[in-house]
Image 1 (cartoon, rainbow, N blue to C red):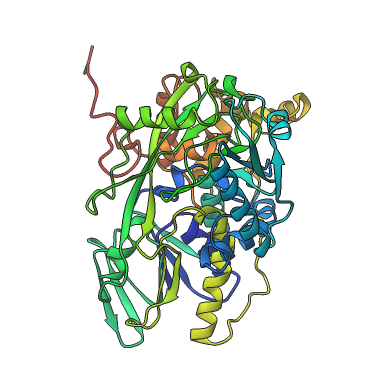
Image 2 (image 1 turned 30 degrees about the vertical axis):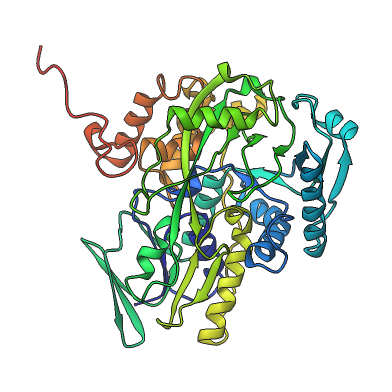
Length: 481
């Protein structure tokens, strides 16, 4: 039997797994999809928020402030790219300016470092490509950008290296209460655990309702994005927000950690049965463009290389839900992880550990916990000498598979064989970026499939794009000669 079963392998679930792996607990992560970071974690703004906007007395406010503070340490230990590029919330009216003052005062109560309200001259000096009409901005130097999927994958790798287990394609269908434990069943398997941590994202309410009467609802809120080619890099240097409204922080324009420009999201509440609806729509993407004009009228959409949509887990409680259920002892909800969930992940993980300590008593800390994740080689970033030396050791690093992103066969093979290795074309894309450039996998996709088939010892027809059923090949078009 496991001490803890964590349902959901997004950035929240994997962060908790890694934090718990510091203790002598038997941990299993249960993920319904074919890979880690496959839900909201893979499709969001990739922003580490400074933490000035969530109310100072809310869980969101407290977790964001703490999460931002320690994010640099976590990313350093896990070898995840993270840059504190700062953010600007721009004002275009006197009412906007009053909103900035409120955000500033809230941020001061949360001790957000370096917050400053700046005038239009300073704003336009920092970001010359903004649409005219700005009258000032709230500047937060501690805001940053990260790759959320790599952070989740890194958390999971490190947790596994420290003794945790991962079970993918484990869609929870039933949870049975037992005397002091829970039996968690999928269609094909089952596990028993003393504690359950419900980090199931947009499905957290559904999972909770398997053991208790409904206490909250999770509304799937869809947001759509444009991702621009690296040629658009330099359009903005900071994360640039409009003034927030009741639907969220608004449509932003930001650099990504890999040098692209991201524009979005909008906010569209969906029906409760639409928790897999991540399709983009013409009208909503048009709405993103209209909203983004309030930030910059110089966005080069001709350089767009892809559009995508993600779902935020919008709780009807208007705050994070992080607590043991009053109806089901040992069942801990970690739900409603809308923005700033990513920014808060390290702090949420710490907080969940304190909850388990309160329930279980003091936890037995490991003496051999290893906080470091093996660094991922990025061939393109190496010096000429380093590249030659690496190729001499492993010739696979001398074979370029993705021309757009200059990704080598060696990098892909490494991504397959890590602790939480990629098993699908999109899984490899998230780990090493083949297919993330201008051609979107048109050139490298077949080669990635060949490498996956070879390394996993499966036929090409069994290599999937993403989850079960996402078949790419069905068979040969010609047989014989």
